[in-house]
Length: 184
View (cartoon, rainbow, N blue to C red):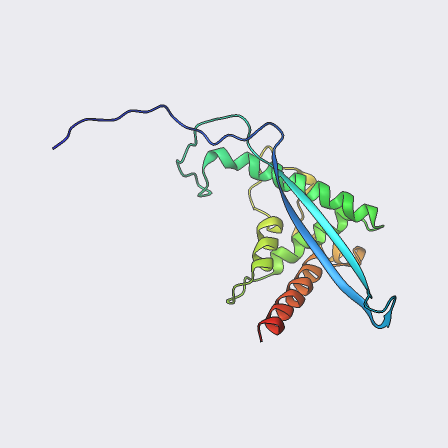
């Protein structure tokens, strides 16, 4: 038997400074099937939303001890910070379209609280629940502007004309239906 113990320098996952991952939501929708602009051109609308997630750029050891939340401590504060960044960016996009962004985000938080995960796998619903499901325990890094109680939900439902959940689920359903049609 070989009793030699090999030792090597620790390795870390490291990205360049200010590197980020972009998650893009795109919607391409035909709005006038009977009206043609040209001989082969239909009228369509295109909407896109890009959400940036910064990547870690300072190497640090990964502490894998489990906490009461079941998540490694290295991720606890960063999850709240990234959710806050996503909400802030989404709020700005909604304001650009003339909608009260904060109210609609709070409405989405209420919808996430009331949504029961389905038996059927649905990637869009799972993503929305990960982003908008509110944790019960608030962390010191968490932004209290994006916390809502059950009693406040009726106010946000009345004051926001759109539902982020309904829009995303409709887009996903249209996409899946188009995939089914193409596969036939």
